[in-house]
Amino acid sequence: MVGSKPVALGIESSCDETGTGLVRDGVLLGVASSMDEHARFGGMVPEIAARAHVHAVAPVVREALDRAGPTLGDVGAVAVTTGPGLFGALQVGVAAAKGYAFSLGVPLYGVHHLAAAGGPGRSAPGRNRPAPASVVRSRHLLPPPPRPGLATCDDCLSAAPPRTRR
Image 1 (cartoon, rainbow, N blue to C red):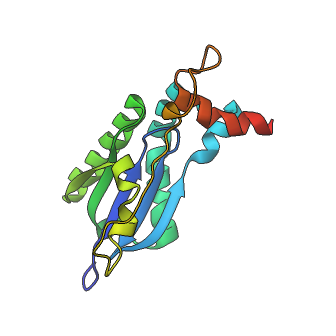
Image 2: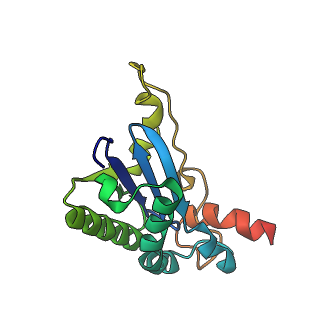
C-alpha cells in the first residue's frame, strides 16, 4: 500500500445476497456476489439466506480482491450494512466485517443501506446539492402475503420474478 491510497472493503448481507465491493479514491475496483445461491429454491428463503451468508462471505471477499487486484493488506477501512434487513443475514455480515476490521487494524463503518441508496449521486466530485433518490420497498406497495410460507410482502416481491420465470 506504500505510495497508494487505501482501499475500502464493503460487505452487504441485508437479505439474500452476500455482496462485496472494493473502492479506492471513489472508484469502484471490483465487486463479487453470491446471488446464484437462491436460484435452485425459486427465490429467497430467509433462513437459507442467513445460513448461506456464513459460507459465502469469505469466498465473495476473496473473489472481489482477486478481480480488483488489491490484497487484504491494501484495505484501509471496512464498511458493512447494519440494517435494515433480515436479522440473521445482517448478523453474519457484521460479524465478518468486524473480523476483517479487527484483524487488519482498520476502522469499521456501519451503513444503513436504504439511506446509502442515494449516496453515490450526492458524493460525486463537484456535487454540492442534494440528489433526488427514491427507495421502493414492496411492503409499502403490496397487500399481505398471498399464501402461507411467504413471511412478508418483501418475500412476495423478491420471490415473484424467479417463480414467474418457471
